[in-house]
Image 1: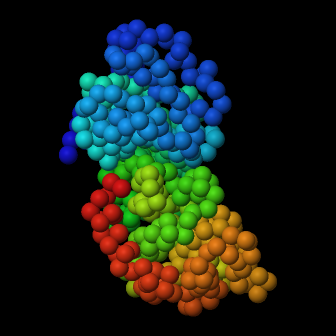
Image 2 (image 1 turned 90 degrees about the horizontal axis):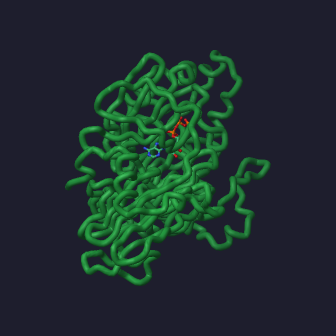
Image 3 (image 1 turned 90 degrees about the vertical axis):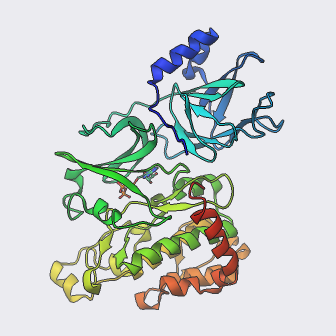
Length: 439
Ligand SMILES: Nc1ncnc2c1ncn2[C@@H]1O[C@H](COP(=O)(O)OP(=O)(O)OP(=O)(O)O)[C@@H](O)[C@H]1O
């Protein structure tokens, strides 16, 4: 498939061409003048209708196509009923909104003259041009926040790292990068070595684990690069944001959506655990969504910064992870001396199962878990009255204080919450995830 088959034109060049062509009043392009809640604008240029602008607002999809239910209607017969969709993902207020365009058409939507391709998604940046050939062009404008921390030592030839910040973590900043040969968009994780030296074992720890893995629900690494003080991981760009942003937008996640998310998480975790790898930092922020246009979407597990390969079944004894998601046996290690940790039997892969329980609780209720004084999970909020008994039973089993009492991945998949939908879930996974990885 032709996917952004040649390098994207430089932005200023594209904008200039379009402005000249259409002789637009450049003052209308001043994004500073936009009203509240507007993340960006699409300026429409068409020979059949007057110049107009479409506002891109938080959590509101914009669709363009022939159908009259679209935000902007195209009249030409070469346009698809829904030609493309523009949607936003909000990570946090300090970052530029991430506005994506998904091509839904048969005849193609072009980004800066390169075909996006049906089903594919691209991140839009200020000055980009979307084109529906023989129908209309759309100039995208958004207000950019200056990223003072943008700095990198990458001087390889394969990629150009842009200023578009996709996310930040304790150890790294993630930017959009363009593969120079193909124009294809990637995510580039820039890890500051000085931040990781004490808490991670060696510079390329994360990538050495990721390179061993090949699974539809685990992030795919394209290339890595090492400089004096930074480490770079170029990986597939995942375009639906993370589960944290999704939950913020939704408030709570419907049980049926949660079922398929948890099913996929267990597929990824089953694969990891079968190779004796523990992730150790499962949380909403580390689960990315490919594209969430309907309730069935692919999720991708990321951030293997503290993942650990347990040789010969050895147990682990370092305190790692994110407090809210951390199993009690890991929390108990905090502040203990090394000797004391060694005497303790350490912990195993069951820590990931605990985190799954926290994730499932958060998704279904939108709130942090509440435990009774004897350490049992409680389902107090009114929302739990609307959730099935099987879902609550599975959460309780994930959140058992004694690690060996938690189910393994295989046992969890046999739980009635999954098992009574087994054939449908298996089929959905086969048809929507394995056969259509762009979903
Ligand atoms: N491949 C990707 N595509 C799109 N966005 C991404 C990608 N990888 C990471 N992100 C975004 O960046 C954020 C931080 O990434 P990540 O968790 O890998 O960083 P980190 O420094 O390891 O974080 P932590 O402090 O949790 O260890 C994610 O929550 C997500 O929003």
